[in-house]
Image (spheres, rainbow, N blue to C red):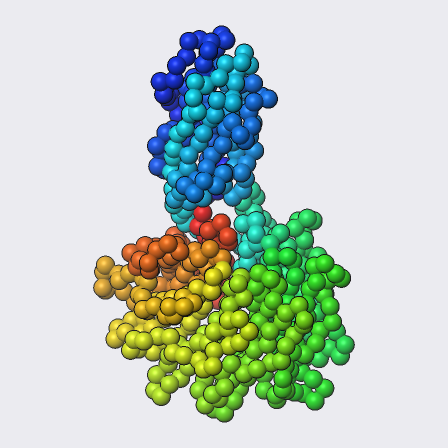
Length: 559
């Protein structure tokens, strides 16, 4: 277990005298003296979960210990919020316990005790007292099992984080009796809990997706095989600490459906979308919305502009900070694919429109992300003559780009793109691209105004060329503040390990040598996924092959 997952106890390290005048502070002298501080002055390796405290040479008058007589500020003058108290076992010591999730990383802090603090005898400091310290960067912990159910094999793992730094994971589990949807819940106190099933129990449950709101409630959707396939949902209630009862998302004439996707906003609303056949066997895109302030799930409706006899391969939906949503889906054309989109606002759904109109080229590996400010980006792999390139289109304000544009610029076929948009509309696109020998992970950043930066290689070369091989299946996530994380699978022969890199918003670009391996057992890993919360904590999950045809899920956390 990563020791940073535990709150550090208050420990005063060594006697430190700072030369304050003290005639006899313990017996009613004119001034009291600060004897010890935690952390010590000028310490530069402070953990983010630490508590801040001090000891004086007399008992503290509780009435004078307030957030105006003892406080901690960062380099911008913002005060650290938390619980302030006299130590239970030492009346001469006071402790500030920061609110979750703790102190900010790589930050300079100043702790201040003012002359308003007095001892029980009325003595004060001669003048205000300050000390300074700096917090460490975060780090990946030790990977571990998210589930070990023992009777079958897992796949399709998905993960979401809420506004409280908790996480929800869902996955499909196959055993001889059929397939089911399982879930697990993470908190910083209890860590990962025991996995549980959340579907109807009828078997044939596949294709799970998950989303979480700001308070910690979660939403899962999946497909069950009865009636040629129906879309079901379940909600995790954070107040109850439990999943509810699975319910059917379709209503009215319930016909065959598949490819569900779901998103939630911070206020607790959610939107689910899926493909559904109509009575004429045409395939139409449908949606349903969960109203946190109303009666929950509403009435499902079509959000499509046209029906098709062929089902698309991709559906995706995302929500912004105001509760607006963007849904996309693909449809086969001849000989390629087109991409459709529709937007939900407080006025309801708009009119669906094509955002990739050229049906002569494919749209493979389509991915969508929606930023908190409402900007969105869609990327895909497009066949261009004899090669494959990354293309994308951007939504900003109230419209999409007039034409998709190519994003990669180097020779070599590209595969497996992903995209993430932060709170200011800054967008990170990643992909795997071949050079003459192997596939590598590349990234490119779009900034509103300046536009596209230069593509960057974000994974380092292997120091042993004989062990170099393909890097593939990248996934990228970014929080509102712009902290971005990428995970991918690094292969060697038939083995695969999971690697990660990260980008802080104040940095000028990715640093390949920061990339690191984040799983630490026999290399049989694949299909990584990642999420990052607003406190710069990240969760990665992936499949790990334990035997022929049997995969379980492993996880690691950056904190």
